[in-house]
Amino acid sequence: MRTTFIVTIFTAFIAGAAYGQIFERTDFNELTVTDPGTPYQWADFNSDGRMDILEIQGYNNVRLHTAGGGSFTTNYLDFGNAYLEQGYYVFNDHNGDGDIDILTIKENAVIILDNDLGNGFTVFQTGVTFPSYYSGKLLWVDLNGDLMLDIVMGQKIYLKGNGSYKESTYILPDLLSNKVLDDMNGDGLIDIVAGGYESSGGTDVSILLNKGEGHFDVNSVILPTVNLRSSTITLLDVDRDADIDIFAVDQYDRSWIFKNSLAQTGSMVFTGHQIQSTSGTRALAGDINSDGLQDLVVAGGPNLTILKNTSTVSGISFTSETHEQVTDAVLSLALIDIDLDNDLDIHFKTYSYYNGPANLLFKNTSASPGALPTTPSNLASVVSTNVSLSWTHMTGMLYNLEVKQNGLAYKPSYTSASGRLLLPAGNFLRKNGSLTLRELPAGTYQWRLQAISPSGRSSAFTPVNVFTVAEGPSVLTAQASALDKVRLCWSYGGPGNPSFAVFRKVSSGISAEIGRVAAGVLCFEDNNVPSNERVEYYVTAVAGTTYTAPSNTIIHHSSMFVDVRSASLIPTSSQPDACRLTTIWTVITISNSSDESEAFTTTFNSRTTAQVYSVHPAQC
Image 1 (cartoon, rainbow, N blue to C red):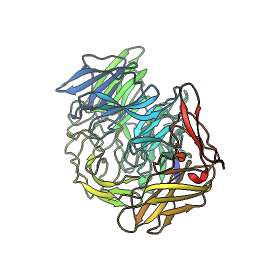
Image 2: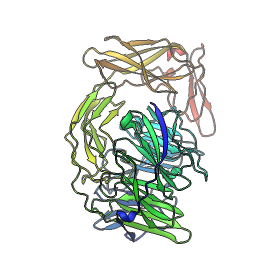
Image 3: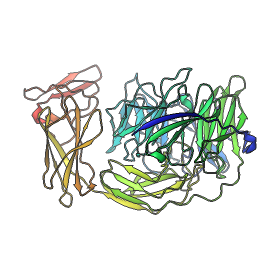
Image 4: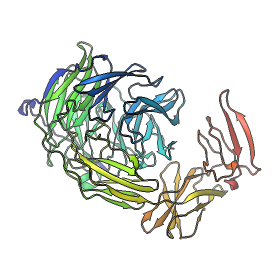
């Protein structure tokens, strides 16, 4: 993909009074028990259409303030010794039951606090562990296009599949600050926009493009303007052209829009527009006046500033509305419809060394937003190497996708039964009229979607559209006659007489088809295995242009020495015992010698004992 940058200075400053103040400032005094120094995390935890508040004070002092009937009910939650600190917890619905769960860390493990709709939270173990000296801020989103929630912890990526998490061989760059996620190049995969090491002089901002399977392009895209505050990076579609643009404030308090021309050119081309001076350290995007354009709220300086979007197809422009509020620390900032009147209000919790804490609500007084969005139409599904979903895009609309597999929840809706969003941010709604799904397991899928306006209002859901991913080959095995030669064999019990496509993945890249065999042939010889690699294989059946679900994955090591890190090398029950390793905690080596296989046990320290087998290459 070609990436180009152009920088222009385009200052659009028109006094906010020309368009009128639409927010009225009041103190937020709705909670009978609260702490002035703790942030609020807004989400609809009980799926009733009202935003609730999770308030976390210190290490594990948690209050859940549940909205209802014009007031909040407060309950204290006991999460044991879960590490609930800012950046180390994130929200989503991990099991499709329609409520919001919490991903966090406890001791040396990543856990899910599973919400049971009013019956409390229970601990769900992900199986992801890390050394005591290392952890990183958490993200919880589908990274490889299979609609399952994957985990990013610091530099590490864990992909979910078959009910467990598998660590990617790719490691994210060090010193990324304020990672913000969305599909920047329109390929259906979530990319990362982030600053680098941030000093008082600001930072460069890079875009790491997602290649799939837990890998990102190491040749990251860097925005043309330096000295940006990474904490202000905000993604929005500024001109309603169905691609993602970027907002940020630089160290000189200048606001920038980096316009993405993907929709116009097919290439991710960014043009920098300086819009006006705005001091701040945090920003949010949303349509605050229901005109279909995403506006911006900027906080963290002497004012809370609302940048009202007046852009057209011919130019980027904003007007401003300011509210004086000296801020040294932004505790929390949210765009939510707190009073259920179908427009976005602003909640702002802050601290000033001079004025002390402030807990504020800026009530939206704009006119009624009018009719609900129109329900999308013309849904279609095409199953090929991947699965392509499409529908007719409506200008400025976002889309909430719901998917079931064999009648059971697979990818839940991000709205409650009322049609209101469960989360104020982080929903990863589609911005255009298509989506590519990858690596789906076999099954019959039912999907539907609804349109969501930038102000958070939703249409009715579409009728269900159905597609099927057929069962693929199974019991894939590998037999190596040399380090660079592997014989793959499998079984197939599906219908018809398909051919079979063989896919190979090395540790530094993503899977690619390396060969195909005719119908009835159930083995493949790879005589050109890349040297010194951890190589993964899987096989699919192919009839015409339609691919089945993949087989199980098999792993071959084409080096004389193998590093084993907390995983089974060949986790298939069909392999001989000498080809399988038990889970271990430390890094060990296995020698491919010509001697007969010999089992032995080694104690690495006082806590960990691992069983290790030296394996002849011909056996595995």
